[in-house]
Amino acid sequence: MNESVDVIVIGSGIGGLTSAALLQERGFSTLVFEKNRYPGGSCSSFQREGYCFDAGASVFYGFGENSKSGTLNLHTRIFRKLGIELPTIHDPVQIHYHLPNGFSLPAYYDRQTFLDALALRFPHEREGIEKFYSELDDVFDILSSLPAGSLEDLVHLATIGVSFPAKAIALAIKTFRSMGKTARRYIRDEELLRFIDIEAYAWAVQDAVATPLVNAGICLADRHYGGINYPVGGSGAIPKALCQGIEKFGGRICYQSEVTSILLEHGEARGVRLADGNEYYAKAVISNATVWDTFNRLITDSRYSVDENRFLRAPSWFQLYLGVDASVIPEDFYVHHILVDNWDDYNKPGGTIYLSVPTMLDPSLAPQGKHIVHAFVTAEADQWQQYDRENGAYRNTKEALAASILSRTERILPGLSNAIELKVLATPLTHQRYLNRYKGSYGPLLKPGQYILQKPQNTTAIKNLFAAGDSTFPGQGVIAVTYSGISCASYIARQFGKPLDELL
Image 1: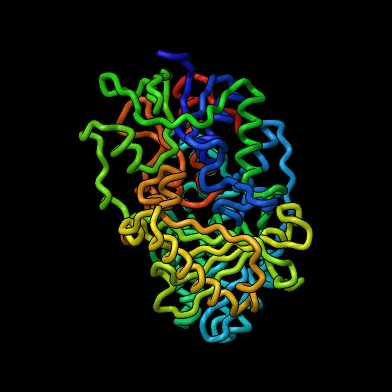
Image 2 (image 1 turned 180 degrees about the vertical axis):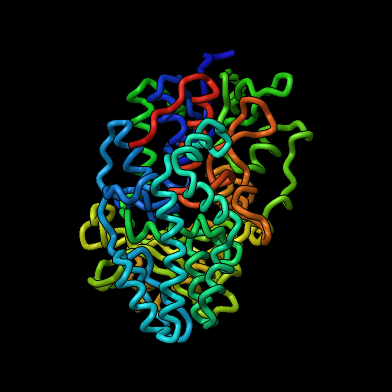
């Protein structure tokens, strides 16, 4: 037995770090175990030859300053609570879409500019466009006025019900609605409905019909309020700042410390065992691993196993991290882009290209006269299991897929292939190996017909074992897992008699 603490957190993803930081600031002792030498999971940074790459996420909500952003301005409120400064750079466009039939549209920060540009493409749907996006604004207005907290915390729910009865009822009704079905109440044009599908797919990796309206209201409305803001220093600046907050109040993060099992005693989580055999005990354990890794790998008792078919499994990614000569990037190029060549393939592996050039906002991430280009597509680990990572077939297959993606990307960046000075490639097996995620997956997605409250919550079937991250409500995305971390910390704090103060 090693030192006892109040809370052990498995993995330093953003959800787990958020929970640890808020609990530590409240006076709970926390201990975070991370397999790698750096924090953040898929929201981390790594360096190669003078370039600082975002490992995954690069579109960030939650850093706005205006009070209208309310509960959804979570990063600003958390770091204010921790007394940590994290400078960001405002991005005037969320995503520039490059779609079939010459359809090109930036999703501007200014809401009316975006809606006018969309209506210019679909003048016969102007009224429907206004009504649909107003539905998203309605969700945002409700959420921005409600304090963050756990949906499993009866005291929190009662407080909301008493203080905001009308909004609580309206939100409860909207949790049963989907983004796509709501769009179809107002819009008939099939190409416009396809655009709304890619609006959802851009961050939820599902079409609009499968995407909960509440999730859409958070992301697609907040881009016009709090907006998109890029942390100075890259995505890794977010977990680094959370770790600073944890350590500021006396918590610890142990790197290169892989948890191999969760210790159970009479159906209760009591601690963890590391790869080196050491065991650590705590009053509560938070798992930032996927639902499948938590209950089918870290816990070996088959009574708690989770069938993979309980949810849809989000895909993994094939990624290109490129250092390029700056001359290949136009001066007016936006940071984030999505390319779709064919609507029939957009939601199939490799069908949609995600692309970002973060050095358009933060030139310090690359050597002088250079840019970073980060391009990625969905992929499945099963496609790559047949290859031995040490032989030529694996490397050749990576290079061939990378060449195909580059060729398609040159539709908006001519000459990109010839401008590359550094190239790093990652397959789903890379994600599986580094992030300890089942099949490198982006986590569980809801099946058609399931509604958002059927996502796993922070509590589990095992007493004092809690969960945070993209396997829990509200789902995928950095701001979503941040909310899960707040929710988890809020529930634990109240259970142990020291409720969190409201984030202001």
